[in-house]
Length: 388
Image (cartoon, rainbow, N blue to C red):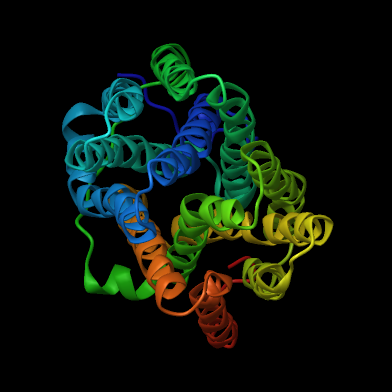
């Protein structure tokens, strides 16, 4: 077994990290291609909004429920085998979705996809903290998130180009790309022993802020990718325009993530996180009030630039507060909370849309970001290290 120390290099491209960035990119493609077009496919089959939201909730709820077990699986199988298992499950299950119109099968397939995502998400975060250096933790997390965002942006464009021809083709292409990640892991990711220490109330208390950030981010992104396409369809957007709108969101994240995480490593992570959350709150509020296509694209870009860095900044805070033995359990906890946010977002937001009005799609997101601002201010008043 090859051992790699996280202290041997301060480069965000040291051994093992590039492979993790590529897997993150492929994971982004799977989210950007499969999730919005699953919602689109169901909407085109006249499925009720609540069932569309519930289907996405099953996917993310499965991630949450699987996460506590993945840390233990990592200890038994190792980083590479666990990640390859997740990629194989996703690549083989996702293309089955457009082959049926049976609701129970749609829910079963999403559950399997959730298990697959959880496997390589926890592996990716654990590996990231294990291979990176303390001085570049936010930047490494930023590159990891950037790769994901890039894949997430390409996914809808690829999907929309092929979906109009046949949904089966777009899902099959996404499957092939995900399966190619197995080769990347085999060639580019060294095996690494994963130390395991169960999470405790103390570690949970230490991670209250980053976990709250993970929940808010997951809630926001899941709502966007699952329900925003339905909202835009009702606003007479075409499938191509929906794909472009998501791409604008991702471009904002692509341009902002690395500069923001670099500033966080150099100055103060809490202050940078606070600025991002405040801008995200304002931009999403403006987005919910916008009815003009051009204005929507502008606010979508600003929302992408402010929301996207929240995940890597929260992830960096996890690594900064845990010992090496706690990393796998902490990563699993982070993924579980992120998944619970993703699970809650679509179903709760769809209920708000049904009970109130579709225009209130982002109302719960605004509340979460407001609460996150309060939590960051509270934490910034405590005695943390300058980079925390």
